[in-house]
Length: 338
Image 1 (cartoon, rainbow, N blue to C red):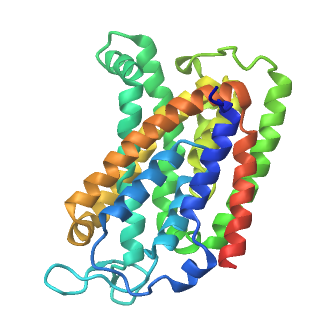
Image 2 (spheres, one colour):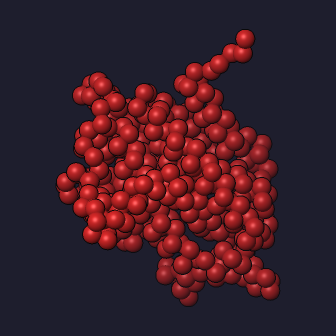
Image 3 (spheres, helix red, strand yellow):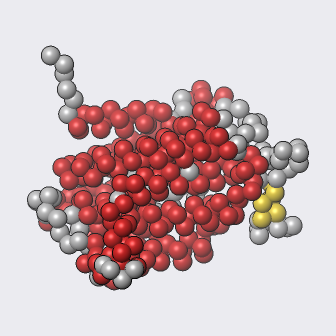
């Protein structure tokens, strides 16, 4: 008879496989070419799309994994990129003397990772179209609950919008690195373990629905929104902070995850659009349309599968396994890059 694996064992194997995929061996880390290629390859696009899609909505930090993946693929070089005519590409840089700095492969990889978030956004649109239809009916004056849900999402989004605009340049300059990511991975793990333990003691029956999303107060939405701001630190995880916030305001695991996904639609769309507008011309000069579309397509499919799986897993098992995974990832990062 065939041997069937439990969901817990399947998850562990899947997370270990993802960990192995994004972590370079010491030899690979030291032998990675320093000179970048002029264009992204289809394999780069597929790998980055897969990592983005799987990790965007899991509480393990998509940004942290993408930083590590870029390092493993050799996409973290600071060598300037050239346009199709062979001239150096430039981007605005208020901190430089002439207000510009070269557009490097590392800049392109970071921007590409944010732009392919459109794939993760599309996955939630497909899976939660009924909720979005309710919001649309609310805008048209035909569903008051849909209008309340829209208001709650906007309220929860506002803190990230304000702090994101104020701190975006500083975050990219100071926190996009290995040590800040490791600190965030460890701190997030401890937070998840503590909140998960508290939530299980307070709510032994995790299958209880709790309040619906349109019933949340302004204060509850702002609580989740402020916690989402902490996720601007790479390695923290936007999904982790918003799900933890959902737990703290009394949502069930299912509703906390759903609010995290819907809030992600607003937050990720704004972040992706901002990045596309700021460095879109440079991206189109250095990343062919084919790899760009492939990355978005792979991110859409993998994100949809991850979202469907996460909702059922949280109800039965909570956040603990993700916390231990993050600790293991942090240890491997230190061993590899220290």
